[in-house]
Amino acid sequence: SAGTVEWLVDEEQNFYFLEMNTRLQVEHPVTEAVSGVDLVKGMLWVASGRGLPPELQIDGLLMPCKGHAIECRIYAEDPLRGYLPSSGPLLPYVEPHATGEGESYLRMDSGVTQGHVVTPFYDPMLSKIISYAPTRQEAIDVMTQGLDEYVIEGVQHNGRLCNAVLRHPEFQKGKTPTSFLPTHLPDWAGVELTQSQEEELAVAVALIGMTRDSFLQRPTVVPSFEPMVVRLGGFFGEAFSVTMGDDKSATVQKLGADDAEVRTVLVDSIKYDPTRFTANVSMDGEKRSIQVMKEDSSGEMKVQMYGADMPCLVQSEREYQLSAHMHEPKVVDTSDMVMSPMPGTLISFSVSEGEHVEIGQELCIVEAMKMQNIVRSPRTGTIGKLSVAEGASLVTDQVIIEYEDEDTEEAA
Image 1: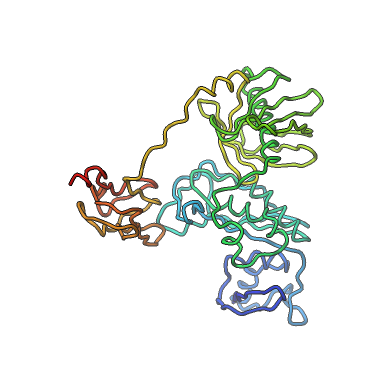
Image 2: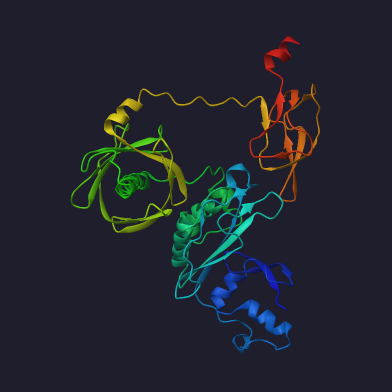
């Protein structure tokens, strides 16, 4: 059969042996890409008594390798919640175009399709996406383009984090120690765009909105060549004034910032079919793929560029002026509640109603993806109510425990 040997490599190319597994592991497409051999075919040949296939019968000790390959393992896990598993139906789910061959290519190894339901009972890996190219930077570019086109909705996943890592300057320099995430993305809260990228996204959203209006044969929010306001982040998000010119250019300026300059962006092309989920927009000679989800009744569209996803809204200048008088929704106070951090099953409670608990004390155990997770108390207090029964199926953010009101505790 075949075996997989794992090593660590330092900056001076010294190899340190970790372990060997007598099977192929999930990283085997990387070896197949740089070596040009089909390892599974080799295993089948050996198992059937035919020996090694011709492409594996080489002189010398080392397999000749060329080019660079990268693999991203896409999991239904939420990096913003400590990589806890996420479950639900994959709707929509669209994989990027992958040929698996050529001088530079993308390869998809997946076990799901649109409509597949990710349950809390099995391993949460959705797919492996592999890029290959003659140089490392080209392999990174192929991978980021693939991730930009990879539409995964219905569950939380780590695809956006992979995108952020690949675009990080230190990763692109090849500085990838095992401490990369805690060093460079220690409190990662999602992809953050630069101001220049935000301006470009604002122009792209304006173009996408105009294309949708034309496709649906409905009046545009703003007449042609008049200023419009694009809100990145929804109704109360950052506002940008965008004006389309008649010479394939657009001007954009961030509103509410005293030092914001007016920028001119050259619009090369836009290819967007509103029945699909990706718009290809080229501005200032650079192509980018932007994911576009359906808009809701308020006109907000959820978009994603470079892994940064957010609701966006196109307004007229008058609508923007009137929105200044609107109040943001109040945030619900959940300080007296303990909610399930993931979908799963409540195995047991470690406390009872009326019991006093300290910060960090074990409250209950929730099982998900074959793992038992301890839920601990976020504060000192008295347990007021156990809101579910042991053995109950939970959804993310479902209330498990309620604390007694602090005023009630003090009165007692």
